[in-house]
Length: 336
Ligand SMILES: Cc1cc2nc3c(=O)[nH]c(=O)nc-3n(C[C@H](O)[C@H](O)[C@H](O)COP(=O)(O)OP(=O)(O)OC[C@H]3O[C@@H](n4cnc5c(N)ncnc54)[C@H](O)[C@@H]3O)c2cc1C
Image (cartoon, rainbow, N blue to C red):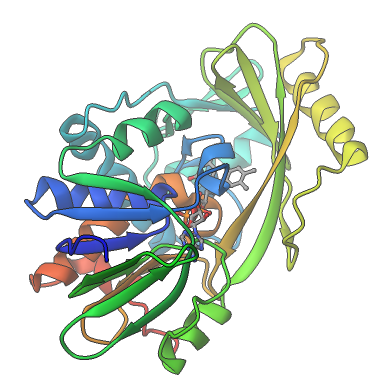
């Protein structure tokens, strides 16, 4: 039998690691179990983009305000965990920049026209690989390699069993398994919440170009700075979990992204990740309704943006603190 931490987090994506780091900072001993290897969080562009994520017409003003509050959870979180938050802003080079400007200003974002479109200072960014690495090294967080095969519990404690037979016990478990299938043994009510999460395949391609100073976005494509170049993405393919890159789609995407930047370059590797999404596009964060079992799941295309807010809401739920105002919008039981 292995150790008995205060909290076990299953899944080391951005939601699992932000939650683990938040709990550790509050004094809890946290074990995170994950098989390792790439996940949606590690291949993402790392945009923290409430403004340009609010450009589509179907995003309401209330949703835009929530995205902005989620972003505002980042500075304190980044400072507490030694993460470098890149407050670079982002450029929009899509059609009709005047209409885009009016919409952003209407929703309370800062934006102004430029000769090539518009720019906003309200969208920020994280370098995903160093951030995940730093979060995994948080004091008070123990990382364990393993695939959880079975999760069973009674009112006192949860029993967490890995594929190699190791077993942990803890009164508190956070399920942060991304778009993964429900773990065996979950109560039916929780398994059905997890089963209702829609997988959305996304692919992006690394291109070694001179790194732009900020994210540049257009209609259906973006080019985001990363170490030694840009990542150009990303597709949104609901219902798909296959991880094989589509080279034809990658060629189209890279051509559109390089046109945005007005540069030529050879494409590097294409990567694929699977996002999890709920029916309303917001994550599930907080108590599952089963004693000691909490969810941090399904942030769709905004897992990096939402990470610290999901972490705070989930940690508050675990500690029995009064829920913050945004907890209701992310309540895992809101669809029941
Ligand atoms: C191409 C692409 C670009 C993106 N760009 C951005 C962006 O710029 N900004 C942004 O905010 N969001 C972006 N996203 C979305 C963001 O990446 C996701 O919303 C986020 O990564 C989801 O995080 P997660 O922790 O829920 O899941 P994941 O990152 O998928 O992590 C879940 C983890 O749980 C583990 N797991 C599953 N089952 C088990 C089990 N039984 N036992 C142990 N471990 C288990 C998995 O192995 C995985 O490591 C992008 C996504 C994609 C695909």
